Amino acid sequence: MKRKVDENGNALVRICKECSNVIGSYRYCRYCGAKAKAAEYVPYEETIQLVYGPPPIERKHTCSVCGYSWKKRLMADRERFCPKCGGKVVIEETGGN
Image 1 (spheres, helix red, strand yellow):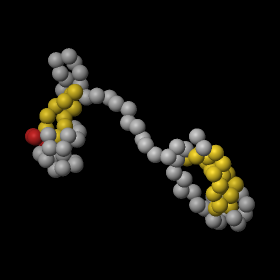
Image 2: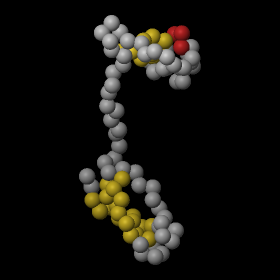
Image 3: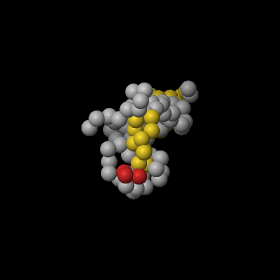
């Protein structure tokens, strides 16, 4: 399938007239179910998507069974068990940004 371009050579993307989400080459909109015939082409704009959430925090994990410890720097930390023995972990925040 050839890519559509406008008179200036800029790439065009197909969006739904009902909900304004990108349809692409699909027959129906994935978000509202409208037929692609109700779509229109608009200039494609490459933008950077920002992710909002807590900043990465350094945490020290210490196993309450074997004493093994390690540090991780993540936004959301779901590590609750020791990788060595499977015991419960005590988590201590050691630093911020």
